[in-house]
Image (cartoon, rainbow, N blue to C red; front, side, top):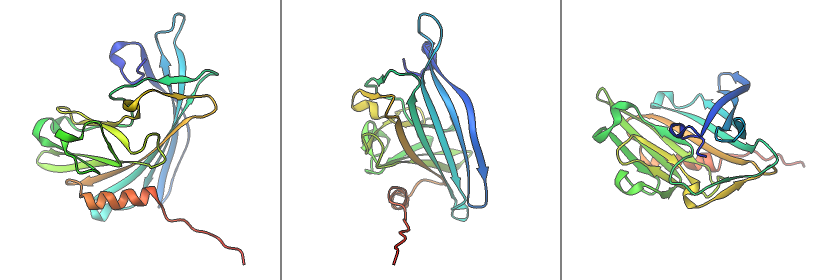
Length: 218
């Protein structure tokens, strides 16, 4: 079943528990677990997948009109059997804009320079959505980490709804096995106005290749 597609009544995703939360002057973080539940089993609902979200918000960019937060999602089998994710045109880390963003009040831009009419199911490093609310433009740019499955990931861009998602399953089936969870990393850039491509590229490079300190023993 499509666990995110609630209308068919065959599956759902529910909050399970919170592991921890912490905050300070540099960042704030919380970790939660949610269950992907199959409602179509003959006897009773069955948890098929356990998904852990680690969300970290960084105290940067406020004076420049932006903020950053990261989501690392780890999806594990709930039992001893593997789960096959079937080829599908949507369903993954997604963003939906405000109701005011329908129609001409919404714009998309990808790392490949594609806009709304050309972006659907292209493979990208990042995708941006922006819109106008009460005459003021703002937006969000989501960056895919190079370690993610099938990176650069395909992105589903809706032609009428202010929505997009990264969708690795567009390229075909894949398995999540008990010994190998699916780990996906994303960085979210929340910004005033429309995104600047050069700024998004710079921040994606920071995300993909962060500075590292090496201790050398003499």
